[in-house]
Image (tube, rainbow, N blue to C red; front, side, top):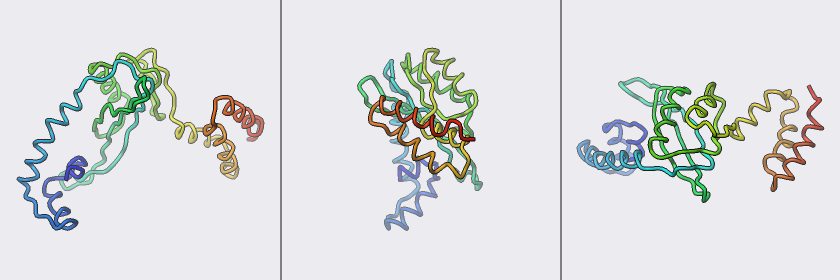
Amino acid sequence: MLAMYGLGTSYDGIVQPLHEMYGIEVSVASISAVTDKLVPMLIEWRSRLLEPLYTVVFLDATYFKVKQDNKVMPKVVYNIIGIDNYGRKDILGFYACESESAHFWLGILNDLKARGVEDILIACIDGLKGFPEVINTAFPDTEVQLCVIHQICNSLKHVASKNQKEFMVDLKCVYQAETKDVAEYNLLRLEEKWGSIP
């Protein structure tokens, strides 16, 4: 019930699946009573104080479709996961919007600051245009880097399709290396092999 509600399913849309999957008859009023108790907890969680420093923060958006007013509409959920000085992961927040934009991310980063975040050492992001500048506006000393998946996708753009499988095998030796020294050595080998291939 809570999962369907969290995905934006209407109360009427929750009743039928509960009956079909579990044989449970639940009224709209009962669902409303449950969600009414959940909303204050969600508001409290979303406004809680955060750590002043996060070593790494992952900022990404997830796209999905929601049925709203008898139409299927695209939605975006902005996801923020932080890793603190002790290596603990924490979900810093979820924010919903119609589309992804650097401007909306600035509002989210300002919200994180208002909730106590003073600095982020590394922000790991996708390739959204203007995103690095927005991060540096909110957190000027933050190092911005693309996540490994986005770096791989960007690397593959420069490799002929007939060579991509072989290139990926060599590239994995870099980003899956056990140590920094091994990664650097494998990166040099990658450059020697692929640096001059058009």
